[in-house]
Length: 394
Ligand code: GLU
Image (cartoon, rainbow, N blue to C red; front, side):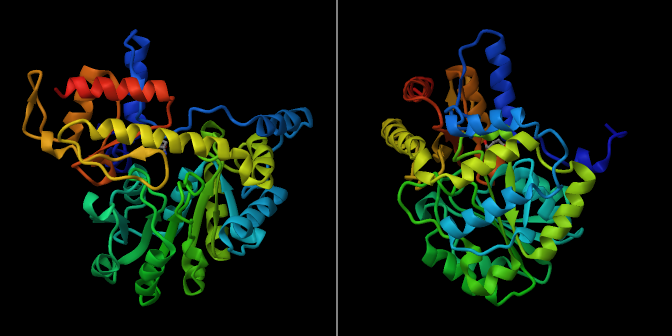
């Protein structure tokens, strides 16, 4: 509509949320849809965290919090960064937000000017490019292939940098591919970035703990890059707290201050009860949530085994997160049950209509050959979903 701003008109709808909403709509009509589109743990928030929230309600934590988060939460985040990532941040370098998505949006809003370029190693999480668009910056996609485990090379990174490049967004473990860059690989990227002191780095580490064995490495741990790296994290994925909406950054103090200013005009501090519960989540040893990671690991094996048996699907083994990102391009141009499949979007829609399984098109993640399937669902649902997909593709 013409009356709406160009800003909103140029913004794509979030493909992950759109697919989830389509699945909900079908479900409400009585269709037995299996939702494997949204990346959200199917576990309940652990009891010890729920109890902390209940205590916070009873202790009357109901007022506005400081915009950048409670002081003791910021302390807990600093301790977490030291414990898990060996990075030292002061509380003045931390900003707590309403989910890691807001953290990312804050960073983009305070760093990007119209015309700046943002490098997105693909596949990238769907909202990166949309947020860059909102900030009037241009997304520059760096492609990867399934054969390379969806990793870009340092040479590709360097080849994409020019005088307009302002920000590069890394995401390891990656949503949607599950790829984890090793310390050595990130250090090799770091060697390139050291040569370009005007380029900032956003390292989205929200899937840090959903890791099946590759040691996690934080780019801010590279001393020469610490001063221009923003580390994003949150409690949604590891602690099954997606709806609680708590994300945070560790950043150079001047960037944290700018994000605080931005947030102060848009949302103020994040939800007070969720912040109190997050202190407990972060202060407890990470072993307390290992049971969820172990379960995801089991499901990863199951879904890979099942998908392997479907002809025409190319698959790699993700090292983290809870997604598989199969290449389904061999189906493009084919007619399935009277429906022509032109691309990954058609493929995902076909699966929704015919198999009643919700997935997400890879086009939304910058790779049009693939679809994303979340295995953050029960084993029973995964088995049934893949069985249905398999028969819909026959
Ligand atoms: N990050 C999750 C996903 O990729 C949640 C949905 C969203 O915010 O996009 O599915």
